[in-house]
Length: 326
Image 1 (cartoon, rainbow, N blue to C red):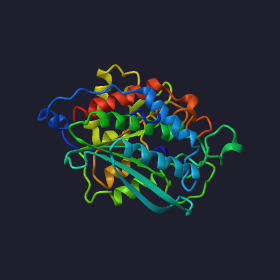
Image 2: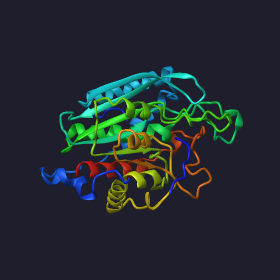
Image 3: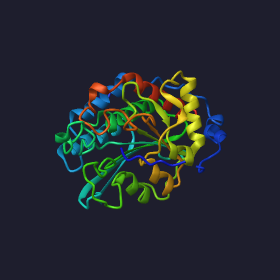
Image 4: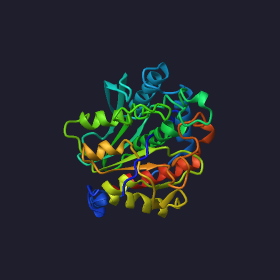
């Protein structure tokens, strides 16, 4: 992540969109399920495991090892795995390998919910205070790994007790190879969201549809605040409302702020625009902050030191509450 767009552990064992009431329709027809407790220690450890590989920049050994880690973890949890491999073009006309990893739980269920995050890390620390660091890759502990850690823990809970709907978890690749601030050449394209754009045009299942989607990005930083992202409000306000109300009911109102924030060029955009799936973006953003995002954003400070179990708990428990009542 990303440009701003201003618009109105380790294994432990929119207008588009449906009316608000339809989000829980299937649960009304099925046996009520206990909502699992999200284990923040597990999510933290999953995050640390990714960061330990090093920066997960496409075409590097760390990237390959981390991708293999995701596949092995999800297979052990019983998911059906699809891997999309392709070559994509960056903002500066380089070609890089792409690897999207899709994990489907209960793939035969017709009613599906899409959860997603990007798993690559940025090759440029272009917002670092030290210009000598601008061409260094970042750890991406918050910007990438934390969101994936939350999804891995959710997958672990799904493996222990399946919800009433099918869940598809997608780890999008090559989200964060966007044009760096130090490169002033105009490419006509920001260069972000390459993996999600590829998937939206070439879904893993023909004519893939989901009831709704939730994208996580930068959801693990200490003291994070999640304002309502503008494009999410435009494309899928009913889902934004559902998520924020659920977070408030669980006592996480300090994290999920009842205000609209900034708009983000993020992976939910091609999901909404190309696949026509109402999808929201839960992302740390603050319209009053100098960068719009956390101070760690696109710097070498995006390390495990800034990762908070409490923040991951707030996000993960909210998502579990949503999907087990879908």
